[in-house]
Length: 323
Image (cartoon, rainbow, N blue to C red; front, side, top):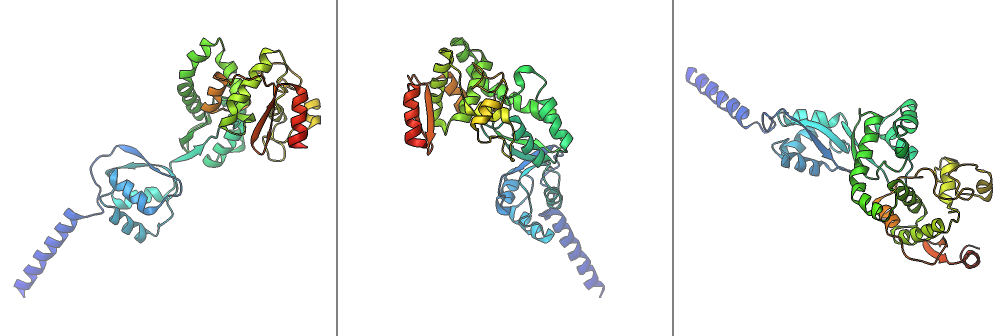
């Protein structure tokens, strides 16, 4: 009996020791540094497990998936960024992932105005009405040349507790970096960067796609150089503001006549005082490199652009394609 007890204790010690030494759930290392682990859109548990394994946060993809099933968290990990350390065991990693992301993905599309960006941020980060108001009226209105147009279209991974002011500066810094190569190009053409950006914002909103941008740029430059009013519907849309839930509502004849705003380019010559949206690189390049054209007018029909040299020709196009 004594011999059996000794053998049992000995085997128990061996099993416990092996479990401790070979524990597949233990932390991969003693590295306590905090890293950002990202989960892409439409996350898949197997892909997440593989990424965790490759980046050194878990010892095995299979152990991760097994532990995830035991925790009942399959298919519940949200997209975004998570603060993880490599001294966490698998259970700790799953606990962190189950709490929800520490950082959220926010995509700014070319042609959005800052209020639209604010709404996206508010939805993603859970802002109050006051925080959204601060974004629109304070954080994005601190410098004259930075009221609009500099909140660069891109996909951002933003900490959920980051202030609106920091987010605005984050987007401005991104704009400054992306726009920097074009500054000397505009200077060579004796065009102030703010002028180029204002024009790019009109091109972004008026074009049906990238293929139209340089032609529209050439037409708008023609109007500016001839001292002709730009008469761009998108500027009236900007002045009109959000209507029936739409930031870019349809423009009517009465809008053109009744909206008394420096942004109404049917009433005022030249460019509006600020950009009307946040343009992407293609629109900026179009403002810098317009097509050479004799056209002064254009319209779209089924996403195809038709230009005209004279107003009479333009009226013919209206009759042919729109009426």
